[in-house]
Image 1 (cartoon, rainbow, N blue to C red):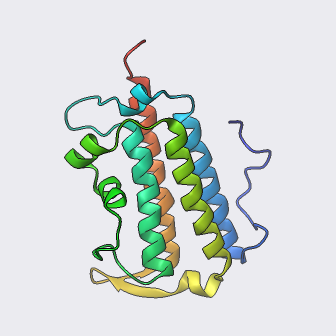
Image 2: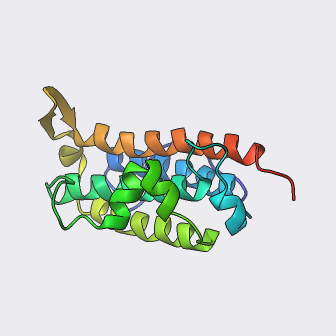
Image 3: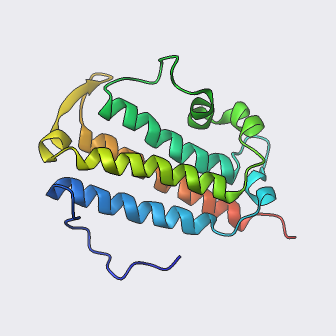
Length: 175
């Protein structure tokens, strides 16, 4: 996946100025995540570096689950403790032993499709909002937080896991 012709963070058609910048950053982060996982087999996606690591496939599922979580928090005004939060999303969000056990056996296309579907919904919803919404604040754990920070955290978390994916990929067994 080649780099885009432009690496300018700026206006994005269909979005208010601040949201357009955010969308541009999210798009670049996603492109680099997909590049980091490109061409991996099911065995490579499922490989565990050690007993406490996450697989690359689980990390890709986690990236999608974090975005779904923040969709629900920011667009629907609800948290993750509701029973309606799908078990698979919760497993991918929390990872750990359950993730190592359940997030396996899927081809790269499964994870890419999930990431694309989640992002498509995010972009549609963000297009319905404006910069005033982006700046709206509430209180989390005793701290002021705005929607801009919440969505910054979505791709900041993705970039962190993209680094893990690159690290794990470099250490995959030969063959």
